Length: 211
Image 1: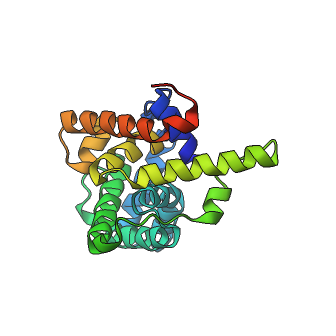
Image 2: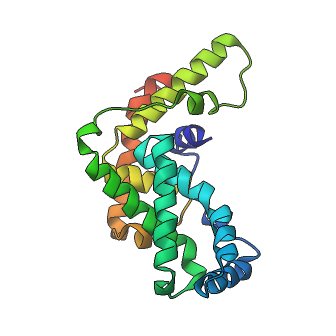
Image 3: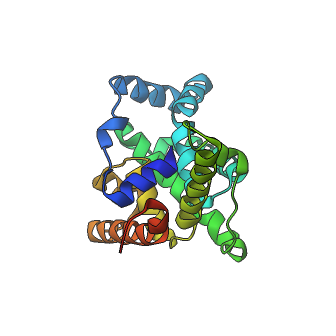
């Protein structure tokens, strides 16, 4: 789960693995894009089915609201469909799509800036964050930790949260993050380091780590 990845990351145990997203049938994705450009709605539906889950996960980690993330995911794919002809390299479709999702999420965050200090926790989502609950006491602690991590993520400055989410949750390479965000490589690395440091500080008491 996402919060567990965050915990491992601040412990130093996770560093994005871009090959996780490599698909042996990448040519089929390229073919779907070509078909979608030609007006094949079924091809675009298949593209949506393939990429909607990682996109909604990414946006959710940015806006911290499940229903809103679903709406923004729809908007992301509407924009992608509208501008599909502008995509020059089909093999970079995922990076291009994440860039659109990033813009959609950021626009939403700016529009709702007055609410940015509030932390919205989806109780149902929190309940699903852990698959193993050996005891009621353990379940309570697990839920508490998940809530702490979610709040810590929501409290990160926007650029740091964006870079951390792409690197740790979406496991994108530094090169992909640079393309998606438009940030320089030094900024990406600095923001990632600072995000990990800040998250480590915030959840340290719950990990049993000494200063």
